[in-house]
Image (cartoon, rainbow, N blue to C red):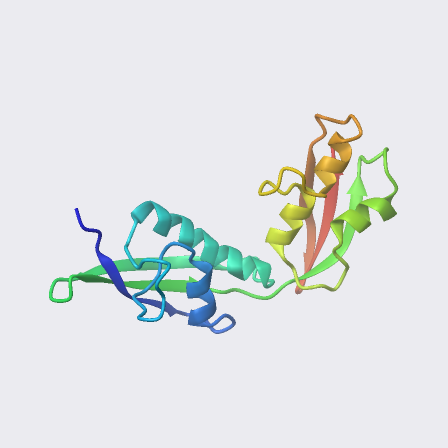
Length: 178
């Protein structure tokens, strides 16, 4: 059957990221737009769920570690035969990277690991980037810390970033190699 199109996607509670920025984060859920020809505005429930996670990820990239979606609604308008989506977000506070220590690493210097990590104290917290620098699941040949260990014979090393302390707006991490 015909998929129903989306007339609007509105955000409530967003101050730090604009509605446009958040709508752009939603890769497969788009509101009707005369100018956009490539991406359809059809509503696909599975893709919508994934896109809600992408909204949260957009916040995590900008330092809003605690951002979450409080509620969302998809309402059908019979007259227009279209859906109106409302997404209620709670942004939380903005965080920054604090000290980052490596634990359990006997193979490489901390300098080298820091170079791969590429994150400095005082930078805006970015949970998505941190995960990618440790293990980028989107690129098999990525230059991340996990690959560094695997390429040198440590195939089964587990590398995890653990939040050890949060003071005001700063988060200290330990990157544990097991």
